[in-house]
Length: 325
Image (cartoon, rainbow, N blue to C red):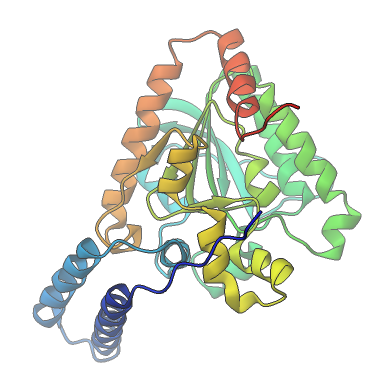
């Protein structure tokens, strides 16, 4: 079988990206000046922000650019969305075995007035918080905590809403010593057997088993500039070409973006983001996410527990393509 020939770079797209990068740098410099000096520079910043949104709306991002958008500074985290969309969120701690993982958190809440059990992969908001949460990469106790919350969801009849945002489970030695692979497998198995409906949304990055562990939903959704794949582009490039710098080429081959996944039937719906990405208008992004998830919860509420379980099983069994000989 012949290997696919990489698509040559689009010079017009490269030029547009260069303009966007320059404009973002100017906005960042002005924002820093306003912060440092206390000056009100809104009159200067307003037109630049409008110009940036217009440039973003004119340019269709490549797969690699969408990966970068999913990682961009200021993109809303799972906890941000929970605070903007939900009320009365109570975080529950610990897996009752080892400890409390800060990368995978959750608890009961009201999602636009509906009682749910939240499962959130939280990357962190600043450098200190990101280090504490290992950039959203959970240890085994995180997945065991997720299983405990799923047990509670079944017990109290709470639909599960999972917001996925991780490059993968934590790969450290201590995680392997505590049974990382087994914990992920248990989480996948437990979620598949839920007697309540589950809606999962990839809001940023969805990498490998770390994402799949809380991704066994009746409906799987994805934000417009998020990605979801068995491996990150850098990981694929390191394995195939022994060169992580070939990540853009790997991203093209992996077909990991929202439009790709919708076409392949891996997700049910793409959730629209504001022009240029969720980081430019987080409140609008939260509104869109809240509305779409609520709609899917409403649709699933018309089904029975048997239909929820059977629907999840059928959904995942039909993914992929194969032929029998």
